[in-house]
Length: 376
Image (cartoon, rainbow, N blue to C red; front, side):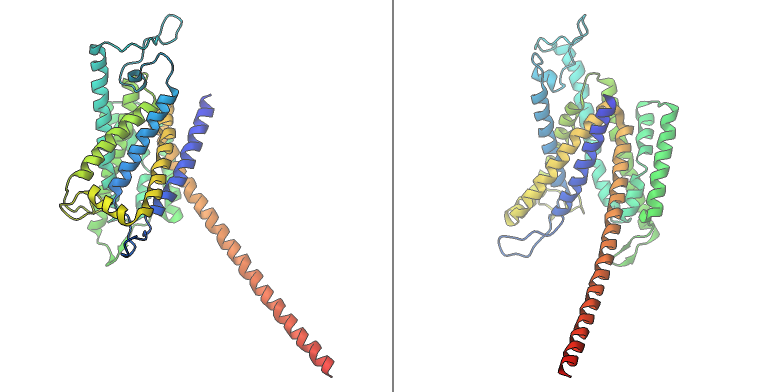
């Protein structure tokens, strides 16, 4: 059963997060306006994150409501109360009554604080990842991301004093080394990043690397905190965590979108003193075509998160990170395969076209020769 569940989780993560980047790419193209102004790009990463968090929270809530068993209160189904203790026959005692206020407060308050802490880690990590791309190349960032297993394990040890079986450390080292070698020899380890003004100075690379390390550390803290929540609060499921983490993440993002922040590259690209939400609403009014790909991006991300949190609940963060890293590797392999197939097909097509022209030219010559012979 566990092998089947793992297979379904891997298939779900692979399929949804192969589609999600396609939708993100559709959002990155210029959109035609309805008021005659030139086409413009949608630049708000904050609103994209907000939409995906909101859709993910709704997807998790719908999943919980549809799967709720009879006799289980909504508070228990949402994970706001400790699960009912098992009876003598081993089944959970579900009488639909709420737990006592003292037990609920002991359970709920620390749990919600953990969710809020993890959501803040997630919201804080994204800007450092975006900012690093201003100083280092995208392949260099992907190479750094391929080592994500290391900060995940390190944060588990540093923050929560968690220990792993010896073979786990070996697996992490082997997977990290293998993916790093693949990325490096596959051309993903470029060390130089030339911008519009030419090659960037060495200190720019150091700044970009520092931002990337902060991003990796925060990502590792996220995964370690998720493991700690499942370990400390027994009985929670992945969909409950998905619901509350995305709800808190959406709330934090909405707060940032509503506040009139100054201009901050990538994080707040709107004019200083104007809220991000107001700028996006103005953009949507002028470019309504952005709504559909934005909704599709949020929906595919939400469906992918259902599989991610299912994996996290049953197999832990190290297995989840391994799946996501190998997904990136297989995506690159697939891209290389299709690119190679396209080149081969193009070569065959050129060869066929040239041969067809040669045959046609020979036929023309033959027809001319026949015509000349007839005239004689």
